[in-house]
Length: 314
Ligand SMILES: NC(=O)c1ccc[n+]([C@@H]2O[C@H](COP(=O)([O-])OP(=O)(O)OC[C@H]3O[C@@H](n4cnc5c(N)ncnc54)[C@H](O)[C@@H]3O)[C@@H](O)[C@H]2O)c1
Image (cartoon, rainbow, N blue to C red; front, side, top):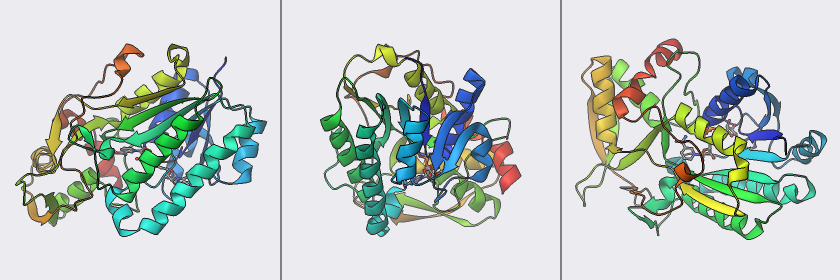
């Protein structure tokens, strides 16, 4: 089968890097859709992108007309904290995703890669008191498992925290709607403003996360798509984590060292619906299926890739 790919959320952060990598690999652009509720126009040059909501009939028509057989589904609202404060908005987006997936029945889509999140974990267990964001990710995982079949194979990728930019400064992270950890810290350090650090006063710990570079994750996406034959079962879940975990405090500290500016900060109690740790032991091992060698293992190396890009946009 010749892969004919559609990326949903193609103008977003991970979507734009994945589209760019695929364009470099194939010398041909993948199809993409994005409703630009987030995302950036500057990413349009990496894919054949239509401005559409995933739940629209026109999306289904595009999938049929272009004979799409593989989907990388990235389109979603993506912020745990925002989802706690604006549950309705995330519920609406969840409904869009359900509708979109159900409409695929009438198409020739055979492979579906779904971007879930490690935020469904607390330590090594699925978290009980979940944020709406993580709850909807789990519900979509379950639904996909239920409908997966030999004619509709599903691969769920639970991403860690994705950060970083292209070291060339040509592409990177830019989200005008939510506050993402590294750009937020960068802007505050630069303007000598106070940073907000979440902390668990009861456990006396800063939340820790696995951080992966956006280029590494987009290579994993691409490798999975072009090695689809290696995935024999109808349904897989992979927990993707980098070698080490880092606290939000360490991210602030490392970034300020790179910028050579001492940071100001205050600490605030973390919401119970957010995880404090995400240590992942369970799950299938993706390195058994694809050649998986992340280029960026340590935090400092990942953070440094942002500098040229941030200087350009902030
Ligand atoms: N970035 C991370 O750290 C991270 C971590 C874990 C999981 N993920 C998941 O990876 C995916 C991509 O994340 P990202 O960081 O690139 O986010 P992003 O916000 O940069 O990209 C998502 C894109 O989807 C689009 N979109 C949202 N709802 C849509 C809809 N209904 N119809 C069409 N387009 C829609 C937005 O406009 C945006 O461009 C998301 O599903 C997210 O939950 C991201």
